[in-house]
Each structure stands twice: as C-alpha cells, then as structure tokens.
Length: 115
Length: 112
Image (cartoon, rainbow over all chains, first blue to last red; front, side, top):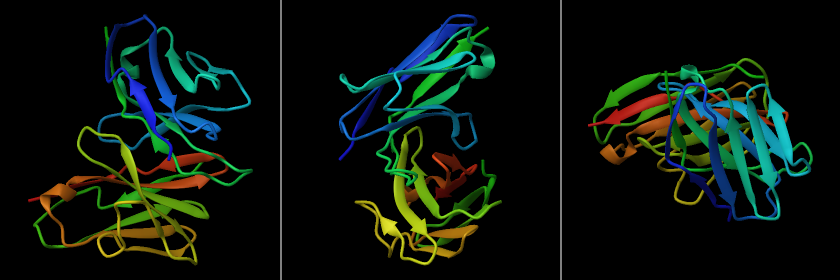
C-alpha cells in the first residue's frame, strides 16, 4: 500500500524567512496530494492541494511542487508569519474521477515561526 | 466546503467503558471517514462510512472495537468500546465534498 514520508519533523524559522517541507510517496498510482495545517486544539484544515497532472500550484504565500518521476512533493511558505506556526501534514491518495480515495498522511512537521 | 461539528469535544473515561462520538455535517455527503490521531502523531484512518452500507474498516481496526453508525447523509457516530489507556487519542470525523476532505474539530479522549 501507499506510504508517505515527511521531513523535517520540526522546523524553526525567523519571521519573514521561507519554510520548505518535503514529502515522498511510494505508490506511483497516487494522483492527488493535499496539504493540511493543524493548529493546537483544532482539526486539520486544507491549505493547498495538487493533482498529478500539474507540476506546481501557488496560492499567495503558499506553493506546492510535485515531481512525479521522483515521487516527491513539497510545500513552500514564503514571508512566514507567526500565525503560520502549526503542524503541517502532507497526504497522498489515488482518485478515480470524482470518487474520493483514502488519504495516507505523512508524519507531520511542526513549524515554529519566531518573531 | 463543509462545516462539521463533533460531540463531545473532549472526555475523560474509565477503562472498560465505552464512548460514542457524534459527527454532524451541515450538508448531505456520501462519504464520511473516521480517523484516529494518537498524541503527537499523524492521522490514521479507522474506517469509511457510507450511508446505507456497512462501514469499511482499515487493517488493524475491527467493528467490535469501533462500531460505526451512518443513519443519514449528515450524521455518523463512532463508538470506542471497552476502552483502555491505549485508546487515548483525538478522534476526527471527516467528509468529502467534491475533491476535498474536510475535518471536524476532533474529540479528545483520555482513558484512565
């Protein structure tokens, strides 16, 4: 089955710097890759996602890149702010049409942005 | 999008007892999921619950321990049965709308 590895487990950056979190997946059939942000005491919230027919997607300060050949994808946060501090999870699934697939999550990255 | 609520938000239970967690969605959805998140860990899928059919359990999770009900398209329950301290976790309900899975706020369970 699918396995998702996520690095680093913790990341500390200064406010205004960039943060990069990397994930690798094992199943080449996976075609949907969402990223979730989980703040303390809350459920995960989707922040960005990418499908396998796209190499990069950007939404304001957040971007995700996908390398299908190498089976890895990354989250990039620019101009980090203290409110970006949270645990970030990557995930992978195989979607068929509009049908959902089981999400396999990475281990999580605890991001700390120091003012 | 979807707005999901869970009850209770947290509970402290004695070993050997059972707890039923409720999940309510503000719109009709076909697929609902239950996840477990052990302290400081990632999310692990327990089961998928579709209305009108039996829940599908993932490897390592069984119906006797985690019975699930899905009586309609906006509601589901997960019961954690005969609890032990190892069941202390956050239990999360999730629904799929379009391509996206949305998560509830979670139920924080501590078993003593």
